[in-house]
Image (cartoon, rainbow, N blue to C red; front, side, top):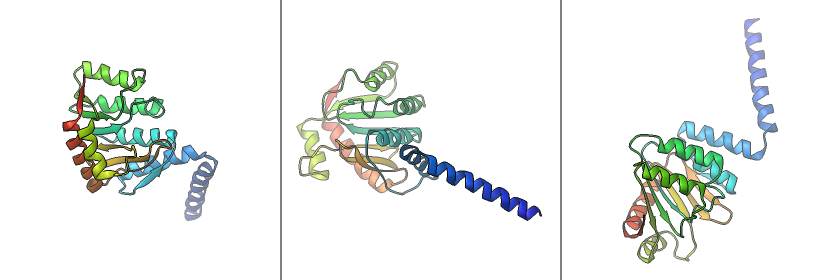
Length: 202
């Protein structure tokens, strides 16, 4: 009798889970998937496309970062970076002690970006945040090693163990992982080399 009751409860539990899964929309399913992979520290390479998916991925990466984040990005135009989940997770990261954030802009920073204004505020308060802008010397390092066709790409590295690499910046087509040290270190080394040669932004 007890076994039957336990089995009945188990069936009911999984029934609720499956019902919830099939009634969730596509974005909700992606959010659930990302949460699971982040909690598992999965080494899987996950795809994403679209601004909403990009903000979910970046938000989860910030939430799981404890020390450093290095970002190569366009201008912080806001399509991804000004979404509430992105900003909230960025704040959580910046609230931690001893963090380091380096941003290498390909274009001029967007002065109306909520995220850029937030970062400037944290920087004034003494957080270890540095902004630089891509110049010819820095660009040559990245293009020669990652894309010799002259296509613009963006990427971010977190704690040298997690990354997101965006190959198609118009459709936000990217791959990311919560546990891939080899790729993360390779991208981080290139970032550091380019960042050293890039122009300062005060």
